[in-house]
Image 1 (cartoon, rainbow, N blue to C red):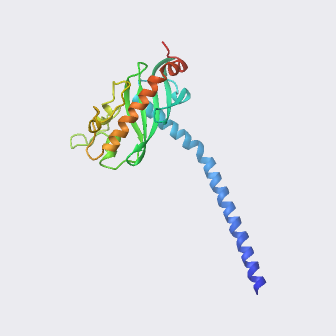
Image 2: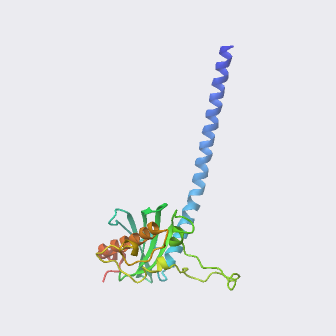
Image 3: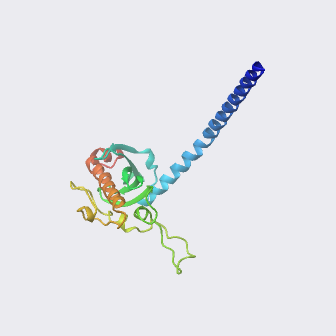
Length: 221
């Protein structure tokens, strides 16, 4: 009787092992099949985001890259946008770990002169209705435009648009509550400060490495 029980356990173990192996093979196959479409979709999404923060370009900025670190040690990737072979701007992608809900990923458009053209938050985990309002661009629907499609371009956001046209200097940016000059949302000071400091560090990293970046992108003067 004991021998038969042992045989049943052995058979069950083999059966479960085979099922586990088949499951692993199926998951690996699915991962392989979907990897390329997912990568293409992500690349298309990033290209669209870059087009929202920079002037019109005809190259693939993601293929023209310069990577470095910000003052806080965050990795920042600069991507060169060109039109008819001429550098028209640089897109910078960086993630801060200082958000209230965790990481905040920012995409910044920077002119060849170093001034910020536009800022877009591409990922965040901030509190809906509070910190998320700092990070989100959305056209407001009213009874007068509810049936109309959203206008082209970026939706306004006073917390993100306040960086436009600015260029980072030696003094770190902070929100007014923390002794700086930038707007913040009551109840979302941490998010506001995180976004402000991130914008500063990205632009400052560009200023610090401007010569090397423009040289690599073919935009050095």
